[in-house]
Image (cartoon, rainbow, N blue to C red; front, side, top):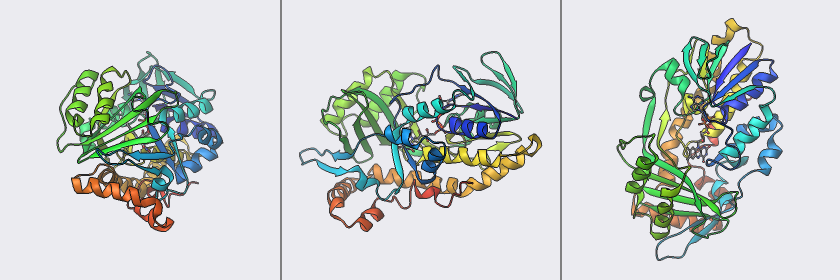
Length: 396
Ligand SMILES: Cc1cc2nc3c(=O)[nH]c(=O)nc-3n(C[C@H](O)[C@H](O)[C@H](O)COP(=O)(O)OP(=O)(O)OC[C@H]3O[C@@H](n4cnc5c(N)ncnc54)[C@H](O)[C@@H]3O)c2cc1C
């Protein structure tokens, strides 16, 4: 049996690994020209069952050794004393089993573990899809038994097999931006945080000494029309949204967006599909059920979803694939439903709406270390957020 997977980030390589273990032939096409390993991208979280998946792949030591070491977070407030907190106090309520790692680092480890067994083709996309017969941009054709879109929020396979993105995208009322800049704040190993009504930013050190990465979040009720392919237009959107709102240090960070060559801006949207399989074509991870970048635990859902998909495909014949894909969707129905509720509530917690909420956030951060552990866990659980969404998911 031959699987053609589009996307080599999290869901793609996890699926490739488990399908290979089950004796499948696997081809992975990836739009990026090469593996952007290292500490590229942004910090992502593996919770509970997703950590189990990594452990079952024999990669937990490698992933844990490469985890981020942002052990404290400092909230800076204009004219007031900064508040510093251990990140463990904030994440304690999220999950007992949790690893934070840069997405590029995780993708690099997953690629390393699968590169000798799967046929990876970088700089390649699926151009046409007729059932499971694919024409690739390298000019070759593949007549696969299964085609999987593991190609993220703006999935190419989803577009080819299910129709335009706007039919499935739900805007959550915010934008995010991320980019790398010199460590201009000089805040050392802590995560520097800034908040204002409808705005939030964090700046944290990268693994390369002297450099840091900024993440901005901004609410806006309407989407802002702009050319997504034009980095200058994207940088203008960020400047218009957050300039002058988060205080002088955050503005200094913002000024460095102009020179960033890895600048990324996107709307915070969910992918909502009633079904994400058609015949022997399916989607996994953000492509099929992205809960919203930075707010929904999408990485854990992607890793666990890929594992569940491979488990349902164990020992099936080609004719049995569509039924296996229905079982895969059924197994994920509860966590995916849960994940759709998480984004808005996490957004509400990390991007305060009003001055009063900005003040309350600061007070909670100040008090948190002094509270009993059980109360602390309850306060930081985001209403049973990203980690709890995978509770009850059984990994076969
Ligand atoms: C700024 C930011 C912050 C985030 N923070 C967090 C966080 O704190 N915690 C968390 O859990 N998650 C976070 N996320 C979300 C997380 O990155 C995703 O949920 C996760 O990476 C999903 O994995 P995936 O494999 O499904 O898709 P992706 O990681 O999006 O990977 C898709 C892959 O497909 C490739 N691709 C795209 N189109 C094509 C195509 N047409 N053909 C071939 N290949 C293609 C892409 O290059 C990419 O390699 C964040 C996301 C962003 C953008």
